[in-house]
Amino acid sequence: MRPDNATDAVEYEFLVLGTGEGSKYLAWTLAKQGRRVAIVERKYIGGSCPNIACLPSKNIIHSAKVASYFRRGEEFGVLSDGFRVDMGAVRERKRKMVRGLVDLHVNNFRSSGTELILGSGKFIAPRTIEVSLNDGGTRTLRGEKVIIGVGTRALIPDIPGLREAQPMTHIEALELDRIPEHLLVLGGGYIGLELAQAFRRFGSRVTVIDRNSRLAHREDRDVSEALQELFRDEGIDLALDSAPKRVAGSSGQSVRIVLERGGAEETIEGTDILAAAGRSPNTDGIGLETAGVELTDKGYVKVNERLETTAANVWAIGECAGSPQFTHIAYDDFRVIRDQLAGGSRTTTARQVPYCMFTDPEVARVGLNETEAKAKGIPYRLARIPMSTDLRTRTLSETRGFMKALIDTESDRILGFTVFGTEGGEIMGAVQIAMIAGLPYTALRDAVITHPTLLEGLIALFSAVPPR
Image (cartoon, rainbow, N blue to C red):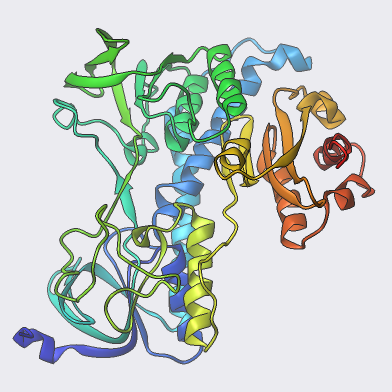
């Protein structure tokens, strides 16, 4: 039965819950078309990317890279009498960027004609949301069409004593005005590895703890081994094949983690814990069952390839819909829904998912890696070169790493590309565009590319492809 206050709902053509990447672009686009659009945001205007995730983390990571250059100064012929890292200033640089991004988002909502409503939304009936306003009071809103874009949050693993220890997530880590004495990082994935390296470069002792036998375990073994060598060279301790059993103490002061490794227990002591062991969807407690929106067994909104939910005229977008957890994928989700609303038939089926891990050097990939190709029984020709073959890396003193490409055995089609090297994400982008265009690898091999640039290394890579 519909609650009484649902009958007093303000009507909109489109009602959007959450201002993340896909949601905000959909709201701006529809509002500029003259549609009546309202969007509800609990806390972070513009979503996690400009506030607490992608862009702030890369800001902090770049400060850490500058710190690493100071330590390497003699290698470049630049001598100094020492330096120190001011984490308060590092944080303020990041905060200044975030303030500018939030202002930009607020202006975009205003100029597009989107009504931005700040508060916590909960479904009280189909396509009807009650908002507890941040400045007090409530509002009830109903949309002819509704888009759910509530995102995900950092997962705190269910380890005895961990919650009581009050570990940091990436949110708190990016707000530190101090350098942790000994940071214990739970998780060897993207967030954990990026921040582990950054805080090591700021001056922390760092230990990465992971249940898997190798870092970035979904990547090919040569990528994992290269990352592990990098981290050991930078003085980061690795506790792999290690299952945390219990935690004691208080993060920020003194903590102990008891691990089970190789059938035996051992204790690691530190000052701070960073939980970087996965994400959880923000779908609990917002009344989705009242709206007729079903969830998967992992708590994500159940959607089809058109991002339609189980409720009529309701879509889900971005990470809460189980889409790959990248901002660029959320943006493509926006395009999927936008085109459907315009009468098109765009779907999420078989789209490319490029990505980059912003360690230094970066790990970037698009298409198949060797592990996936073998698992799917897809034959390939392999080309692989060290980054030092790319002469630009020698001018930068950044020769660590390698590039490799998988080429079809029956044609010259590029099946996949992986790079572990400086500016890897930028290099990967060039190969991705060639793949989108359906170009054979020979188009890159035979291209005239400016010397000396990092992209020039692609000529050497694709010249190393074995013949059919």
